[in-house]
Image 1 (tube, rainbow, N blue to C red):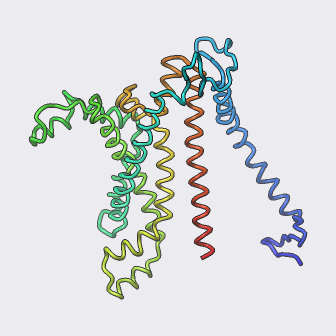
Image 2 (image 1 turned 180 degrees about the vertical axis):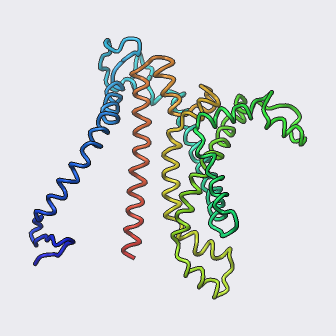
Image 3 (image 1 turned 45 degrees about the vertical axis):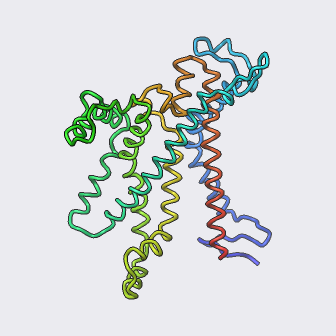
Length: 321
């Protein structure tokens, strides 16, 4: 028995493809080939090269003299003492800073983004103008935002200290980006200011896809707005929120420019990307820095795979129910 497909093509019971299906697949690969070649040139080759350098003692001053050293950049023991990234306290400090930054910033951005999305979803005069204005922080390049906030947070000339001192909240200026107690929070505040519109935009797209008849039924039944939000809106909005959180978390794990511009190589805020740059450029340890870049890639890739698997299992489970 044959299964009818679109455009008159058929697949037999044995699974044989029709000529039309084969031609479409061949055409699809033909159209995709330029993009795949471009990705191989600009992404796959540099990535493979980085992996290889991570297993060498390459130095930026003379890459031609590099030698293969195996896993020594990751872990090695010399004279009874362990060396390598896996026992490097600075690396694990960078990992901790990155995870802390990711968890706190993404959590705050999700909450604020949800609130803003709910406001922008409401019907009020000038809604289009407000939606455009909300996106301005996200549209500003990160380097520009970091420089702007760097001056605003300056301990002598910054408007933040001036405003807080005028209000009597603080007595003396605070070096927000230099003080170990405030540096990470300063970075998080700037990131939340810049990236919350991105979260709001994704969540707003999810809100606009929700069916209105559910809310009309809830209104007829006399259900209050708070209960409707927690019982109807939030469950239906969960897929959009999950997508927004995943995208933002994967981006936050690679944070570099904002932290580097605001706090440079400070160990209090150093992320995995900043640590990798320090090894590659400042110390010219191409092999060791490439090993750090490899670990960073593996961490991000691992979290991506786990997220995709968890999402697939969840949606498959809902489909079975």
